[in-house]
Image (cartoon, rainbow over all chains, first blue to last red; front, side, top):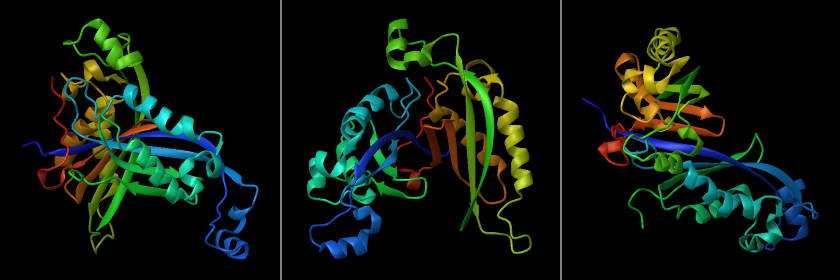
Length: 144
Length: 148
């Protein structure tokens, strides 16, 4: 008997961007204490690695959860071109309000990618460096 | 519960082609992967087994035994082969990362008797992998086996 299986597909992308961690809710001294060198007024940058995980039925005609020919241009347009070689705090409207931590970056990337029409976005994972990563689980199946 | 993961590598050729599609459709849907001469990858396979460590050995399973199973079931079957022509389990399926991961699951699952197969992760390259797991409660997205 064949057991029902679940298949997901994960694709990795890279972009480089600068940011500064600073919250207007705190004083300069508190920002310094909370964010340390990440609060440096001139900003600093990272080579971000983005993993996008898709799930859904494998189309018998193509053997695929989603065609990378559809996913790659979508992610390039919505995220990579929008964020690569940008100063996140100034050039991404959402980060004029929210602090561009990797947590908030995950939320923003998910907001931009969740409408991918061909498969469910199951997970977003972003590595800020090879030592730090943040994961966001997409909305469960059937969620509105 | 403890999860133990073992990694192996194999190299194989494949191409994507659906005989129900016209040559133009095959090129449009599969892009450069439809080149009929084939192309290849160094695949990396991560196999995760879950279970409780045996108090007598401290092991979920004997990794030497797992290594032998992976050698016999996967490497001997797929390494330096053309996946479209030489792996009967993939006959009639397009040898995508998704379909190969599901075939590997079905080959390994009955052979793992200590612990339980938890996840098959197959990297086609550093930037692309497919995960195969058991579907929870029989719900959620299913691998159909991809038989055309």
